Picture 1 (tube, rainbow, N blue to C red):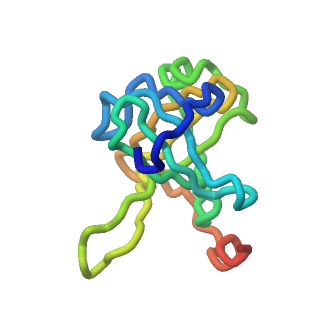
Picture 2 (cartoon, one colour):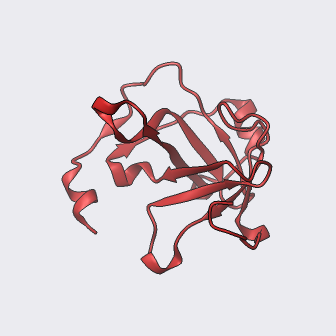
Picture 3 (cartoon, rainbow, N blue to C red):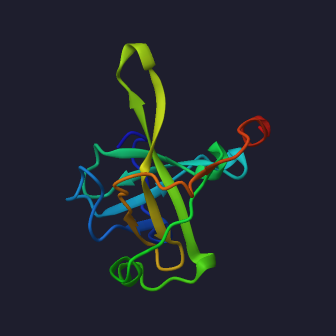
Length: 145
């Protein structure tokens, strides 16, 4: 584990029945964040199936992204038919290895959709970005630090 021994709290375990893109065998994750920073905008998803796997995820609204997602019947069933208030959308961050464009990037084509009450989620892979993903003014959310 990247953080040394971590106590596994059942309240923080998220299950992705179909796994995640490129990590289909990893289905159980624990949500980790530094609790002394107030309300976090990014978290670590630590795989419980593969201790070497930890993904950074972030609230897309903190980056000025607003998702309007339509779930299929299959996706809704997989998420156990959540109420709108129980759905969280997160995006996976990754480190760019390209020296010309180094830094952190977000996979905006494959957001995570999570039923926070049932603690079950899926990764919604979109073939193309729909125009209803809107970018809001980035200055305000990022400077409120």
